[in-house]
Image 1 (tube, rainbow, N blue to C red):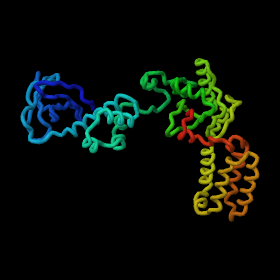
Image 2 (cartoon, rainbow, N blue to C red):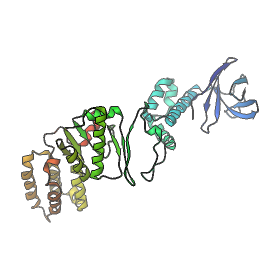
Image 3 (cartoon, rainbow, N blue to C red):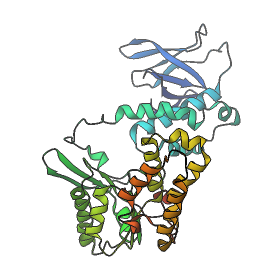
Image 4 (cartoon, one colour):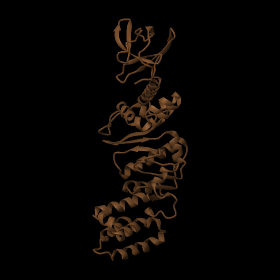
Length: 372
């Protein structure tokens, strides 16, 4: 639906046009709305949209005013409706033709159009418009591919300033493809960061690098780091962070150790706690965890071990074992066995004592360089 596309003045009549919900042009003259009722080879007959009004206006095929529209309407004009209609059309037009966030488009158009207080009062909020606007935008975006073999439209390779955004598009082996997206400005932030964060997704912050992967193998992560290091050569800089925080995927852990041997690698404390609780659920202890305060406190102490000084962790774990041995039915035995087998082999990976940044979600609240 397009915003007003034409405005002319003829015989003291102010004309412009908007588009109806069905895609048909509507004539606006002196704040009254007319729809096309009949067409001739060189002329259009437009009638007021209000039922039984009957006031006509005539235009040529090129939407130029010819005559009519001078009679008195049997109803008042509705300028507020027109203001709302035009602003909504302009918002929809921009939503369909650019990738600016919908909320930003809404704010810009509301500011630009300067509607009167009555129009503002009846105008839908951004939350009320968002669902429909997003649905219309999705119709203009290619459907999600069912495999990694697809063409990327040119508009998705560039930023809104028409600068390069697609960094890497490479087929590693058959049916495996690596896509990395990052603008030059994002790479500058990443390469100059002393601490970087890697996660599956960030809900609020815009990552410095977005990677679309077909797997989470160490070889894939190593290729990502290799491509980023190649980018530093082209830009005559270096990519050598002091601290790298990730989740606990085996592929990323191995790749970080190999590619950044001098960096301090930390596991995200949130993902550590999440893994412990998921295993509590796996062992069928969630109900007992909810109703048994003693068990719940011991489980939480287990989750809190990364917050202790490195030299206090073993003694802290021994205290948890001693208390767990006193629980009726020994419900924590398998949980502690799991902890010994999976977490005690590399304490330095998950011990975050003394660090200001203990989890990836810190970058949801601070302006920190991050990698996705």
